[in-house]
Image (cartoon, rainbow, N blue to C red; front, top):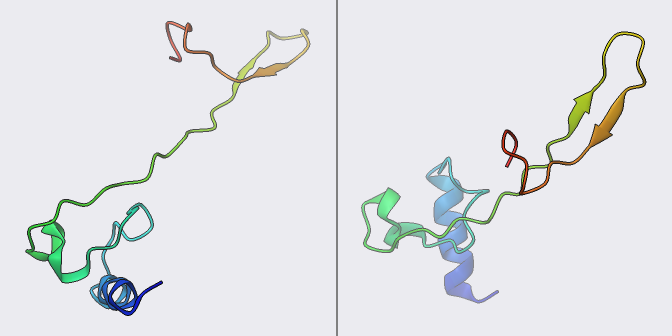
Length: 73
């Protein structure tokens, strides 16, 4: 990490940016959220959802949703 990257990261921490953990690149003062001109890039947040199904008296089934699921796509 270069000195400039460390300064930008430090600025984000000191400004208590609420998007700090989601940002892929820390822009510091240059970030739009800090009245700068650079647009923040957010990390992809993969949701690890599980579908749990089972009727009373039936075995409980746990599975991950697929893209083809019409309700959980």
